[in-house]
Length: 316
Image 1 (cartoon, rainbow, N blue to C red):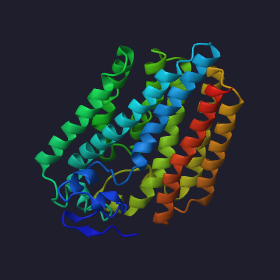
Image 2 (cartoon, rainbow, N blue to C red; image 1 turned 90 degrees about the horizontal axis):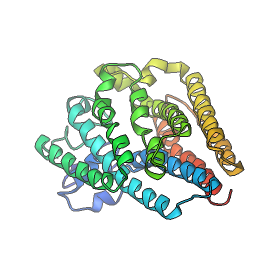
Image 3 (spheres, rainbow, N blue to C red; image 1 turned 90 degrees about the vertical axis):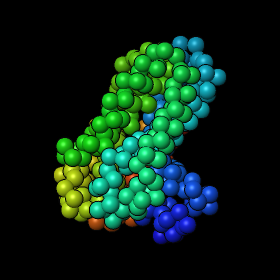
């Protein structure tokens, strides 16, 4: 479906028709700048956070020390933080990429290149979203605050990486997967081996699904001279995806062993693997609509794995 034009200017080509199109005209460009009309990014940022809370809760439960109320509060805080920080990240990305976005068909109607938001307005909006993230941050224990702050360098440099390295998705993976550490840091106030294994598995998962996403822009990226794993892997994308997804599943499996997880967690991982395999089997890198659909299916894959972790913590 094509996004409609509005009094606040046309919606970007990669924007979905949503309640944003019925919001007050003055707010629409800022909501689009934060990708509120495309919640998949917030989901994919949030899911590793929830994985880590659930896996850490399972470790507590097996030790007879489960703090379910605290885990629930952390789940809510991470949800708010994920929306705010994903929006801030997108705003920062668009500030840095405004001259590139205007040359790419899918992004040229975004608020900054389309002139719907001024550069000063974008920086002010970035500060507002960062403030929301700060409020969430100060609600966490000190160890978790320090852990979160350690990710800021990655957040700052990620938008620049497509100008520098051929697999900028690796830096996105390091950034978007940070939540796989945060649940442990906030609930256990330590980072056991399971946290780092879960993080590494999530990084590879992100590289895989964002390579699928990047195939939508493969031709435009070549024209404007930006690098991506989609351009690098090209027709060999499927074998690479098999490698990334298999390694991701293996690392998450080792995390489960290290955490002492039970059959429900393993069942979730099994269904997760089947869903990733389905993505690889169905992928056609020349079908942009299918690439977007398969990319979005990772929300469901991540939630399936989360369900296994939660069941393991609650009834395992």
